Image 1 (cartoon, rainbow, N blue to C red):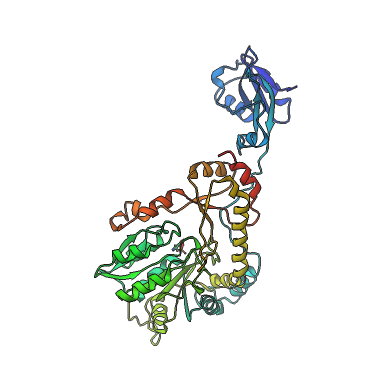
Image 2 (spheres, protein in one colour; image 1 turned 60 degrees about the vertical axis):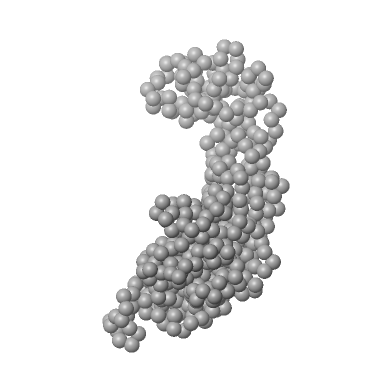
Length: 464
Ligand SMILES: Cc1ncc(COP(=O)(O)O)c(C=O)c1O
């Protein structure tokens, strides 16, 4: 027997009493034939008062908004799918439209982000140590240590820490002498930082398509796009997947091109047993807060060339001469990382293998719990590659529906990047883009954090 029923045509005082009588704060509104015609929650009631209604006014059909209901016999998952953060109560009606029961489900409102940094180990200890040392700008022991340890993690000789991953790419291009009149090949599916850095260098980007399956830059398209003006390629190891570095390095060698690997999303990934970051003339990383390891904001250029290391150090520091203080040989930048950021980076680096293992486990958990829904095509793994999981990445033809359901339940999801070629500010640089356009429309990143409720996500998506 449902207590909180109210007839259309009652006054608001009667309606309020009916809402007030029950802990779930909702009244079910019936017409004279006992058909359910709406529901009014305590929140709806407040809105009626704010719209100028008084307690003695009559409840009119026009006071009722749309409502979600279920038919007698619907199962738990069907009922659950009708609820979300805002809809806690679903009335259940029989074939004649009469209220027979209702379903109540209070969603956990805790937000599940797509990514979050894990800062609970030695990060604070090192940060405080750097802070107490008073070396809080860009000199201090943690800078040297982070550069040394991160470059050795990449199996590369030198590391030049920068203020973020975007300026790292710019610094690399300038150090390689890329400038006006030079063409630089970039993939269509990447974050805008890759192409922006080329434009900062006043060079001309040439956007080429990616492989359909791996989502990484297509070597055949690189070859097709080469002109006498081409000076460099920026392969991006997008979403943790290593590019085909054997083919790319061989194209670069044949055409005498520089290679700047953009490894912002792929710390620790490997191609043919070799770490990304160790193929190119210079390779760049990002340590933004959602990256595999973070320094808050931050980046690094790594290289095996002593000469490029020296050049980048000078350019990073306003182009100041190493030998003669306040003497500037070239126009440089302030692209330095602080000792405070580097302190966090050192602590992060101590557990990078643990983070990579954890993210792999997260990917396995998603596949285990969601594979049978037949909704997702998981990111491919290749025998010759060690893919890393930056963000759980997959494609689905039902991206909008998946995103709508998850976002309504406070679970954050991200669509893949828009293709560079489809944005008006970059479209004039487009050479080819077919696969990238398709992937970009169906790609999605799922939360890659601890405590993902995989079963709940599976239940939420089951009816799609
Ligand atoms: C592929 C790629 N390149 C470059 C960057 C730029 O890094 P940052 O945000 O540290 O400037 C990012 C990160 O956001 C990225 O995903």
